[in-house]
Length: 146
Image (cartoon, rainbow, N blue to C red; front, side, top):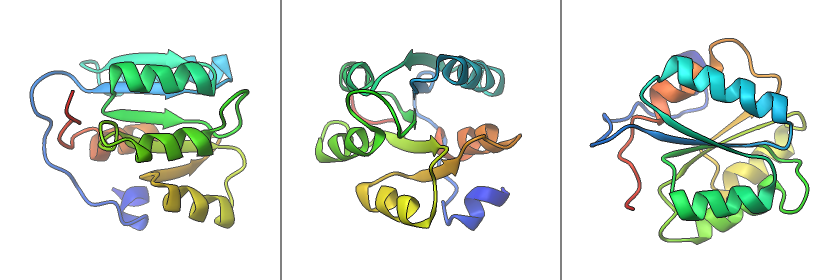
């Protein structure tokens, strides 16, 4: 629907076997937990894991290989730009869909993130329906190989 159409994100095919895996990486614990709850309400079948800094989030993505990652930018240790870059540099992780959500999004930041391989870039606070729209459109692609 609206937002992703505006961003030029195409509709996707249905997921293969198994529930979608969704990781949330955000150093704001309250935001991460609230986002996890929104994901669980929108996709009760989803497996959801949370991480609160770039280093542990990077390990989570590398070990668990989620289908979809909600990624914050400003975090201690590795920032979201570096996490995004490392995921896209890995052949094994290249299928992970990356949705960046941050309070520092402007045109230059959005451009840099899309260049690094982010699939969608959203400004915090997330508007009602944005998480659900993203899940509806992005978490339905073929999952990455595990």
